[in-house]
Length: 111
Picture: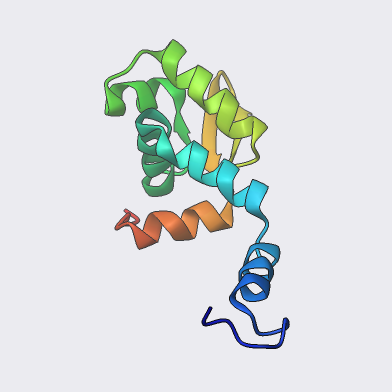
Protein backbone atom coordinates (compact mmCIF):
# COMPACT_ATOMS: atom_id res chain seq x y z
CA UNK A 1 0.00 0.00 0.00
CA UNK A 2 1.56 3.26 -1.11
CA UNK A 3 4.78 1.64 -2.42
CA UNK A 4 5.90 2.42 -5.96
CA UNK A 5 5.55 -0.51 -8.37
CA UNK A 6 9.30 -0.78 -9.10
CA UNK A 7 11.48 -2.44 -6.49
CA UNK A 8 14.40 -0.08 -7.16
CA UNK A 9 12.47 2.89 -5.76
CA UNK A 10 10.39 1.11 -3.13
CA UNK A 11 10.63 2.26 0.48
CA UNK A 12 12.09 -1.14 1.41
CA UNK A 13 14.86 -0.92 -1.20
CA UNK A 14 15.61 2.71 -0.32
CA UNK A 15 15.84 1.73 3.35
CA UNK A 16 18.22 -1.12 2.55
CA UNK A 17 20.41 1.23 0.52
CA UNK A 18 20.47 3.77 3.35
CA UNK A 19 21.74 1.10 5.74
CA UNK A 20 24.29 -0.11 3.20
CA UNK A 21 25.68 3.41 2.70
CA UNK A 22 27.02 3.65 6.25
CA UNK A 23 29.58 1.65 8.21
CA UNK A 24 27.11 0.78 10.98
CA UNK A 25 29.54 -1.00 13.31
CA UNK A 26 32.13 1.79 13.11
CA UNK A 27 29.60 4.53 13.85
CA UNK A 28 27.94 2.52 16.62
CA UNK A 29 31.35 2.09 18.28
CA UNK A 30 32.12 5.82 18.02
CA UNK A 31 28.76 6.73 19.52
CA UNK A 32 29.30 4.14 22.25
CA UNK A 33 32.60 5.83 23.15
CA UNK A 34 30.96 9.26 23.17
CA UNK A 35 27.93 8.09 25.18
CA UNK A 36 29.98 7.54 28.33
CA UNK A 37 30.14 10.85 30.24
CA UNK A 38 33.61 10.10 31.67
CA UNK A 39 35.11 9.38 28.24
CA UNK A 40 33.33 12.39 26.74
CA UNK A 41 34.84 14.65 29.40
CA UNK A 42 38.29 13.23 28.65
CA UNK A 43 37.81 13.72 24.91
CA UNK A 44 36.70 17.32 25.47
CA UNK A 45 39.80 18.01 27.59
CA UNK A 46 42.06 16.38 25.00
CA UNK A 47 40.40 18.44 22.28
CA UNK A 48 41.06 21.71 24.10
CA UNK A 49 44.44 20.72 25.57
CA UNK A 50 46.44 18.38 23.31
CA UNK A 51 49.35 16.88 25.20
CA UNK A 52 47.66 16.88 28.61
CA UNK A 53 48.93 14.30 31.11
CA UNK A 54 46.90 11.78 33.09
CA UNK A 55 47.46 13.75 36.30
CA UNK A 56 46.32 16.97 34.66
CA UNK A 57 43.25 15.22 33.21
CA UNK A 58 42.41 13.81 36.65
CA UNK A 59 42.67 17.27 38.21
CA UNK A 60 40.65 18.93 35.45
CA UNK A 61 37.85 16.35 35.51
CA UNK A 62 37.85 15.55 39.23
CA UNK A 63 38.48 11.81 38.90
CA UNK A 64 41.29 9.56 40.02
CA UNK A 65 44.31 8.99 37.82
CA UNK A 66 43.40 5.29 37.80
CA UNK A 67 39.91 6.02 36.41
CA UNK A 68 41.39 8.35 33.78
CA UNK A 69 44.00 5.75 32.80
CA UNK A 70 41.35 3.06 32.38
CA UNK A 71 39.21 5.29 30.17
CA UNK A 72 42.25 6.36 28.14
CA UNK A 73 43.13 2.70 27.58
CA UNK A 74 39.71 2.12 25.98
CA UNK A 75 40.07 5.26 23.85
CA UNK A 76 43.55 4.18 22.72
CA UNK A 77 42.35 0.66 21.87
CA UNK A 78 39.67 2.19 19.67
CA UNK A 79 42.19 4.43 17.92
CA UNK A 80 40.75 7.73 19.18
CA UNK A 81 43.68 8.77 21.34
CA UNK A 82 47.45 8.35 21.28
CA UNK A 83 49.82 8.58 24.19
CA UNK A 84 53.51 9.42 24.11
CA UNK A 85 56.19 9.63 26.75
CA UNK A 86 58.00 12.92 27.26
CA UNK A 87 60.59 12.25 29.94
CA UNK A 88 58.71 10.86 32.92
CA UNK A 89 55.38 12.26 31.75
CA UNK A 90 52.94 10.52 29.42
CA UNK A 91 50.95 12.95 27.31
CA UNK A 92 47.74 12.24 25.44
CA UNK A 93 46.21 13.54 22.22
CA UNK A 94 42.93 13.13 20.40
CA UNK A 95 43.72 11.57 17.01
CA UNK A 96 40.35 10.60 15.51
CA UNK A 97 39.41 13.38 13.04
CA UNK A 98 35.76 12.35 12.99
CA UNK A 99 35.41 12.54 16.77
CA UNK A 100 37.25 15.88 16.58
CA UNK A 101 34.59 17.13 14.16
CA UNK A 102 31.76 15.73 16.29
CA UNK A 103 33.14 17.58 19.31
CA UNK A 104 33.05 20.82 17.32
CA UNK A 105 29.46 20.05 16.34
CA UNK A 106 28.42 19.77 19.99
CA UNK A 107 30.14 23.06 20.84
CA UNK A 108 33.71 22.17 21.82
CA UNK A 109 36.24 24.89 21.16
CA UNK A 110 40.03 25.09 21.02
CA UNK A 111 42.07 27.10 23.51
